[in-house]
Image (cartoon, rainbow, N blue to C red; front, side):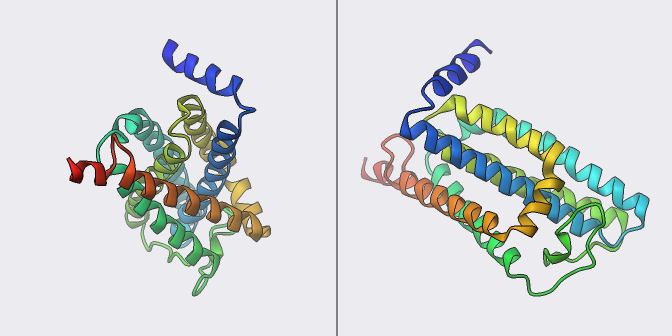
Length: 224
């Protein structure tokens, strides 16, 4: 616990440095975008259910996302030491970016859930039963929570204090402000494009480091 606190103090005392500030701003934008994205997907999946079931599914989605982010956060620093995983994480983030781009240009709309603003344009078809909605939300949460943790870890890998604060912030945003974020992303589309560019940048950086990093890169391993 003392090591965690020392890492946070060290990074935030040096927040004026270009690398620390860049990492912090990237983490902040990723957290905002993926919290809103999570809320929109969960709301869209629950949209076809009766009011009481819809509220339960949305609550399940938020709680599951909180728990999963905490679980992934506990192991992410160890996972990033595995050779090839940074490269895999970068490729996964490219898929996340493509998914976000598709949501900005949906093929069609659904009815949407009144509890979540903006989900009527998600392109996600609502589930037809409570069990189907709960299962779809659980699967989506696993994917989106892993996306979030990998993206934050990729952006702040050299700044463990910012990484920890970023993961805590992602949990807080998901639990408290996801619907508000979703509403503003829907109203001001440029926010979504800025977030998309940040995620693409982090993905490219992770893919590059996943190839050439002397400790966890794929190329140095092949050249041994």
